[in-house]
Image (cartoon, rainbow, N blue to C red; front, side):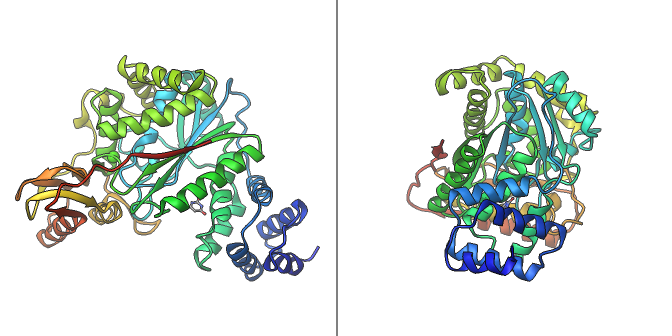
Length: 436
Ligand code: URA
Ligand code: CA
């Protein structure tokens, strides 16, 4: 087999065989196929696409390119959840305990935030003492014991994806549905999931800006799951405004605690119950969606999900009393209101701009090496559709640095993320579609 012939076939729009795809992925991972050939192939895929079968083959080849987590010592159907990334997206901290309380084992590897989106691992580190690094044996033992563990990625998972994603980033080949779908699904499969629930964000704060593209991506991932025997459901959710009102690590942990305590923001609660219900159904703990929704709603209302969160925090060395006393979380030194510049109705909130502002405040990283401040962030007081009076706070900044010029700039950026119109604006739809 010659790499040039494979590139030639894809350039001419032909379907590659399973052997050809395995040859490419293995050769590239080992360094036998150079970047220039792999980038020519990625560009050919960008223009000509891949069939569902090719996409599934690519996914499996990447999943098998490195370590694979063996969850077979954990009893039951392991259901994983993945979000394509958003702003103020605290769902894992809520959904994990919720489905674990329903008896679904959750063995989750999560990432850190980069750019305008946050990451679960950073949020967990806001809890004093919480350890995100665990040996594989500790990780598995914790899931067997209490049904839930969330750790940073360990081992050499999907090196082929890591290398290819880096290459795509600099060759303008990121925006290809089969390449994105296989990249995401390869990591879930290597992490050992039997079934997968995907939260595909769409809108201004999301990776996929248009609903049409988001549906195509969701369908491609569900097709991969079907093709490789891991039942997959995708929920397409709105990221035209931040999901919950809190953006920032400590603030989002508090928001998760509030939500599990039944005092959470309505929209965040609704999406978490939806995602949890799909996980519970795939995990075989309920017959049908209605029964699954009823079960997770009950576990939220009766406090069992919050109790699971506390048990999980304690198991990973964290201070579980943060659930009763949020002042134990890192606290920002100052709070500053951001007043509305005019009267009217909130017509739009730019989630991406707020994610960037939170990052600039110190809540996130511009580069992988940046240190973050767990206490800082933004709390929003208004959602799209809400009326506002002039001077009324739209949001509050949680800050640590005493730099009046910087604070003024951050206030300005936050205010500018709100579009205020004189005519009443409609509330945004929260869930657009469920793809099964
Ligand atoms: N996220 C991924 O993990 N892979 C992609 O290709 C795009 C987004
Ligand atoms: Ca939030």
